[in-house]
Length: 404
Image (cartoon, rainbow, N blue to C red):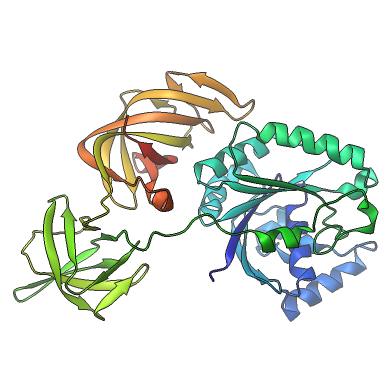
């Protein structure tokens, strides 16, 4: 089974790095060098080990005390293997946040019980939704600062879950923890006898990822074409499904059917494998074309709706032209209308606005003279992700949800 990928999010001083360090320490996942470094820090921190030092890997992080890039950290329990994705805690590094979330199956949101939801928390929740992450674990941290009082935890939990309510997560669970002292991390704490749930580690062990590849839907973007005499070889990586010699496929944008006459390096291949294939029919395929499953084709449309998060200081405006880049294609399009947008500071929903500003989350409609290619299958939703580009600047990210 592939490791469960967990993205850790939270404002910069709410204890995210400390929780990650504690998880690595409690599960015996630290190498000798990191463990020595951690134990040495106890000379400075007399009452507890500085677990955040484990994730502060970059010199700049050490200097500023912030995480500036997402880091991927493996760890395992007795039941399961994991990849921890540590994202930056400051809004200035939003691109790294997005990059980290893009790999995740679930999210752990760390919130200081004394501070509650911040603007950055709301922004991260919008991004989680945008990236298709529908399971979230809420770690209400720093319970030691409120004497582990159940009343304060319940008040904070109610307030935080209320803030989360506009976003329809499929799974939400909350835990009262102290990352610094290890309460309810890998085992239940005697200081929260009022708490009837399980430890954070047990909750992670019991979770299953919701995203699964559909092995039957072949998606093969052509990355290069090589001509060997009269033979044309289409080369690339299978991003979904499988392929084999003799299988019938369809090639976009020509919508021509053909059989796979020859496949290298073997007679069959599956998702993530590099292959070169020769088709029985002479189709003028070139870089950027798509070889697709003949029975489960994606959707083709000249107009689509998309949910996007706007990154640029220049607003998105109706009728302005952009380049859209997905895993399938790169085409020019225009924003023909804006259905609504959500402002991260308040979660206010504004219908039919004229523009989308930086850090706003919106549903927009795009049109193009060329066909958009996107998926209808939930299991292939990750293939609908897109970048909006203007003058070589990535101005927005999102995913295609339908055609209007």
